[in-house]
Length: 79
Image (cartoon, rainbow, N blue to C red; front, side, top):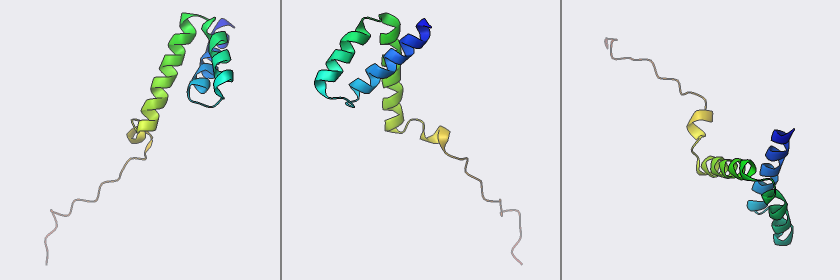
């Protein structure tokens, strides 16, 4: 149950940090999440880092379908 609370807190903190909520709401949420302690802060930082990498295109090659190679035609003779 504690893990669930920390993960939800990290998700709320990440959403607040991304600008989803107005500033007064984000500050209030940040104050509540800060009471959860270091595990939530670590999960929040990890979430933000992965989100930035995803926005930067770091995972595009992993998510893209593999390219098929063209057949090698060098072995065929031109007659």
